[in-house]
Image 1 (tube, rainbow, N blue to C red):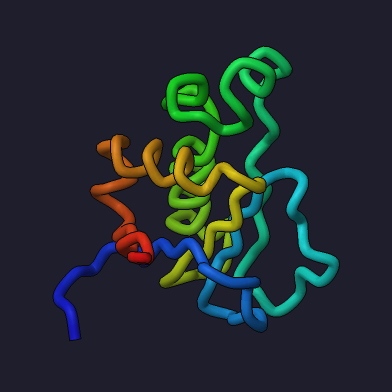
Image 2 (cartoon, rainbow, N blue to C red; image 1 turned 90 degrees about the vertical axis):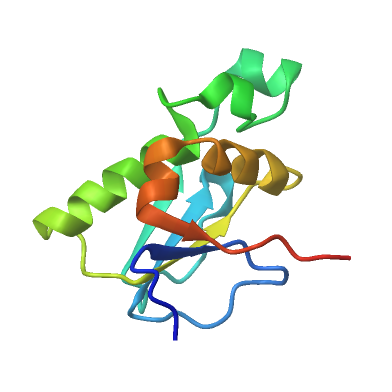
Length: 126
């Protein structure tokens, strides 16, 4: 067992499995599941601006930064978890928009607050 007390962050390689009460589901705005019950919570990352989508793709690290995007959403859910506004969770599953998992991962790896609070699981090799 690890001594790492940070909240685990995972990008699933395949479709998300069944809901778990200890897990928060964070999804791209266009990826909301049909069934949201059973999770500690389901949170959508807002879609980026039209410029960012046209120039770089939704959720790119250079356009979202701390002012928005997945890092800001994780900061908010961490605060909401600490204050009791969200049920307690020990794990976060991230479902990025198509083709954006790498951009989301890069944004999270570069964010000092995210890396202090969350343990990003290694990217799958292969």
